[in-house]
View 1 (tube, protein in one colour):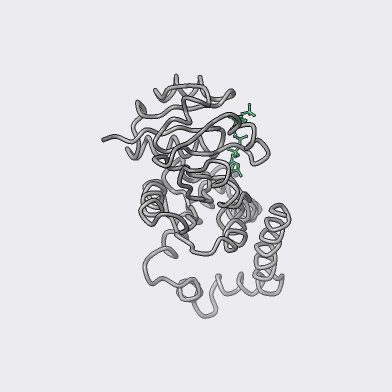
View 2 (cartoon, rainbow, N blue to C red):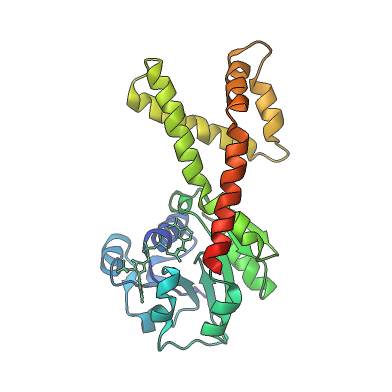
Length: 260
Ligand SMILES: NC(=O)c1ccc[n+]([C@@H]2O[C@H](COP(=O)([O-])OP(=O)(O)OC[C@H]3O[C@@H](n4cnc5c(N)ncnc54)[C@H](OP(=O)(O)O)[C@@H]3O)[C@@H](O)[C@H]2O)c1
């Protein structure tokens, strides 16, 4: 039997998952109810899902919680859930136990996805706590729109958020700077942007191959006396690695602060 899905909140992140899951055939539009005062009607028009109120969305077999954390209580207010239901949280910084208490006796799986889900290249952490069958089902669902990694320890969500949630921004900055460098060398702006994006995509695909290691891949590009090793010398002297290391640590620390 087809499972029904309800979205409580469907903005940037919920919408990215909805688009990705529909496009991947992981869920069927007719089985989805979206409760979002802002996007519900437009999504019903664009994607053929039902726009409903919170009560309607909260009756689904699988309820996706995708509001901003400070709207959580308002989004759940007056709703009740049953043990037959699975609640998937995509909310940053809200512990699984907090959500489980609010939606009891529904089962809960906590995740940390990113916006790549919209085009099938998402990256998601899935907390491996709860019913093993639920964790697997959620990992499969997020795996349908990219890469899903099950992590056992919830404390790792801070470092994971710094990598998966914030990580695309570090690379956007790097891509823009690389494109600027090419523009300085005479490359037309739009071509430089396209080439930077394609280069990052290719590097990610190579680094993601089974058994691949970034250090070995870097060595393979950097031939003796060549252009790449000249550039790498600049990156080493300017603290590129240290900056990225510190950036990830700072984002993880900020995630811890927000959780407190
Ligand atoms: N964006 C990301 O890259 C990202 C990545 C990972 C996780 N997340 C998590 O995803 C969650 C949503 O973030 P977002 O960026 O998608 O935010 P967003 O674009 O603001 O989407 C949230 C949506 O929920 C709606 N909403 C607010 N209160 C509601 C209620 N009581 N009932 C139903 N809908 C309600 C909002 O409508 P209004 O605009 O009218 O308030 C909005 O359309 C957050 O908890 C965030 O931590 C986001």
